[in-house]
Image 1 (cartoon, helix red, strand yellow):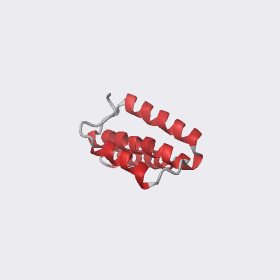
Image 2 (image 1 turned 90 degrees about the vertical axis):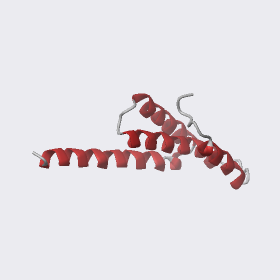
Image 3 (image 1 turned 135 degrees about the horizontal axis):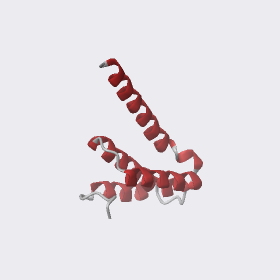
Image 4 (image 1 turned 180 degrees about the vertical axis):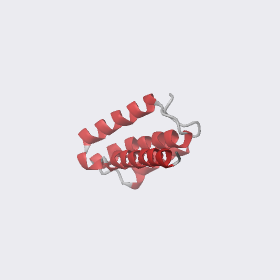
Amino acid sequence: MWFFPRNNKYFALVIKLFFVIEGGNLTTEFTLPLQFLAIFLATKIFSKHESYYKYWLFIGFLGGLVFFTKQTAIGIWIAIMLFLAINEKNKILKNYYSK
């Protein structure tokens, strides 16, 4: 699939987290893989400096799933949007003052 990395070190990290939390059957456990996937996709977008609409759509879909699973776990998506807003503001200011 297009959203999994070629090397499996990120996937291994997510699988390892299930054993660290000791299988408590908490909703936080169910949202952790979705959070890691959102972080991975966001870093992939920001590192290439291109806008991939399918990645943004998938990040939003993951955010919706996490919000309906556990409302307090959407901090990752808030951080991604704040970073995006600050980054865009800096680009606008940089273009304005460079003229």
